Image (cartoon, rainbow, N blue to C red; front, side, top):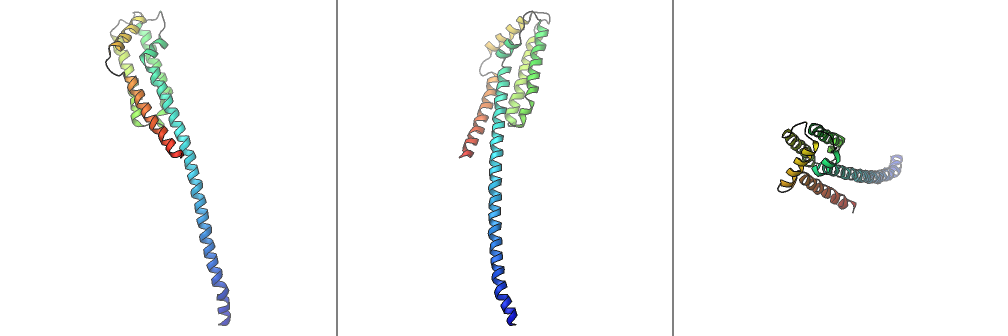
Length: 182
């Protein structure tokens, strides 16, 4: 019995020290893992914010390029017919839209719907104006008809509305990123 007591005198304190060391090491490791996860999450969030802001920039540029005042002057070629100009305008809009399709991953549904809506509205407006003219007429007539229409539109143009939506959301993302950096 004395030997058992002697063994217990050394074993019990050793077990207590072992348990205490295990608890301390476990807390240290968990704390270190959590710190590493937080740093990784912050880095990921910074990257995500940058990607989102780039998407807003690209979509703002896309909407600006779809503004009829920009689009008409960029695509117009003298000596082509209404039908050719009409097709060039539609092809340009579709090509630019397809070039920016991936941006929908980074923006809200509202922003993407606004961008998609702009594309559709511009195409419908161009289609309607082109249908009112003979296809063989000079492209200058379609150009003039669209410019005249823009001059008579009351209120905000669809492109201006879409830009406002994009800018508002980009500001929210930008301020969210600034808040998280502190």
